[in-house]
Length: 262
Image (cartoon, rainbow, N blue to C red; front, side, top):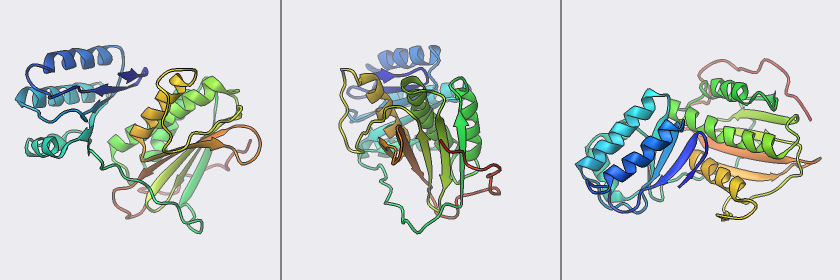
């Protein structure tokens, strides 16, 4: 199991039934008690869920909602997905079927964003930056759960930027397009690159950073990490697609200040 202060990826090993529910419940309860507010259950090895398993999922989903958190299921098999749909579990949390993750198509260079905003993040102002980002994302065609996930994913990138770089030159840029939102976190560190399909090491010097990238990949539809085109530093780019391309903004253009530059 990989976890951070706020996010945890919990693998469910084998069928989720009356015999396996108690151990999984204890594991999730410990995470929530330690302050984790985003739990992702990996259901790749689950071929059967009984009433006890369904009860666990719904109970933990309600518990996390009650403390401002979120539970979701990923890599759900067709059989299990069918059972979850019949029991109306899909109404209560995000559920991603195995192989169903969306891959954003490349942006047409001629398409300009409806609006773009850039703001600087101080090393001691991560909470304020996450709050500001959440307010911007909430104006878009995203569900509250999607706003929650993108804020957490960007928080991972911000934490890495402040922890591994100078900390005083971190910028966040939010750009709203007709079918997606793009969030970029730019720093002034040494710079590094991770290909979108690159396998990440479980151990070694990059293990801590690798866990953060894995979690970002779970929360966003696309994550790219590369060196800045000019100067020193890294750009982490996270993309979230809108469910319906009916227009990116619910409110007026939030651009109230000029973008900052390094």
